[in-house]
Length: 276
Length: 354
Image (cartoon, rainbow over all chains, first blue to last red; front, side):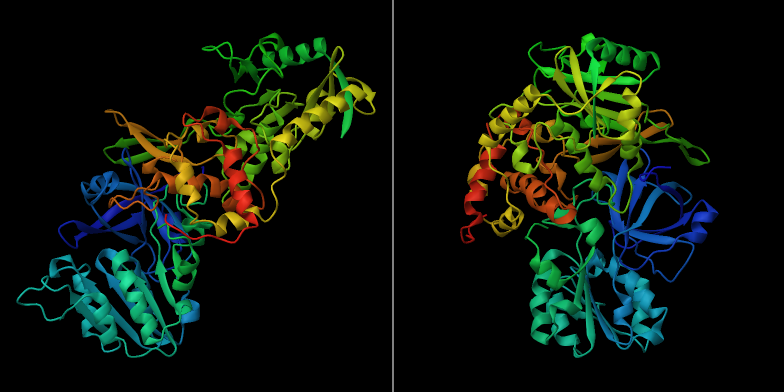
């Protein structure tokens, strides 16, 4: 078996998140792999549709739940469109887990502010549930999630669930013009929502994922609130092929996103050439 | 390192015996499509080879990282997908007479291929191969191996090296693999290379050294410092983004992974050569491209070789073979590029438009 040979996985559940974004729950066909497979929140994999190719996404399910993984994707390119044509019971390939992960060990006993935009909630969701599954080990959990419109919000059932929990503070927001008459959340862009919702800074880590434009305008807000760059974590999503530090595609200067990342601190990203 | 002598007849016998034993022997030969060019190709007998005539058009990397190779075979059946074992492509082979620059390139690429995850496709072929390089006396105005710590007599990556002498070759035996290959074919311990050989090496070195002085250790840092230098833009104006440089390069190893599926139920996944010089290399499905312009892509290739690889793997990802300069349709010259940035190495960093 060479490095590039994937595990076979069966699609066991499909959830449409938005008109173009879908979540798939996947189970390893080989019981031995299902038993031994482990990953940490933030890691990614190469998912393949046989005959179409491989595509890189994070593992969107929590690291604390065994026997399956989930991925969320937007049907945009060749592989994701092919993936969308598949049904429950179909087989896909998976290589992974690859890359580093969010340092939950150092976040233990601290507050965490999760900030996500659009489908950027996928990697964050993995961390959120991993934290919630060991809730007593962390302090305050604050989630700020936004999308362009109500229709673009993903994981709606889970948002509902988080909103009902007393040990989670959830703020949802949609961009002005994206609201519906029934919308009860905020109408503001994510940076504005962060400014209003985040009141704890001491002993607090920020985990932020979303469109580059959202990150660009949220980082100054976090700086203003007093977050040091070393306590702000995000992920980079460069195009990848091997995921193993060989194919040369994901380089940003001397950084191999696949091996050194995908999780980086804002301080690390500031040191990189602006090529992502 | 021991030195032995092998006559032309004995070398010829060695090649014949290898071929008879089903070992693939690859050597520089006159290209089938262009008699003025040399290619590395399998030979049947020593007389097919043209040793030491001219640097082959492409490096020898394709015998380790083929232009395209099957990495996965699968069958889509009603019950699901079945993955089939890909038979190992690593067969015993001997590369006879490659240039020291091409051979050194393999050892340099070994580092990334073994970085945490060992690429068995690469190492399977590396281990199944015995490399008998040839002392290089072919240096032209484009070569700069001595600037990257190599030289016409560099034995890095070789199992044995041939040095032409009267009636045959002095064989420098470097590894046990090299010793085993020549064991029954060499005669007479040769204490040292004879004076004529020493002189030839010295002359060859001098010729290459005149092309470019040694690249200093702080060059990587200076390239990083000058990441935003306007020179990148100016120099890249000549770059067509064709990737010819990468395809002839002994150390460029970037690849793509693609599926090929016919109408039947069978399909294969392939690993194909790729190049950071094409726009699609980094293009996201969303349309965003981190290296959207050719100057960024051109800079990436230079940075990867002289800054990224040194900082990650401790050495320059270039053997100074000069091929990229020879093939470039835009007339770009890596030695010139390196020269320009060397001038800046001591100068203060200059920011500017990208």
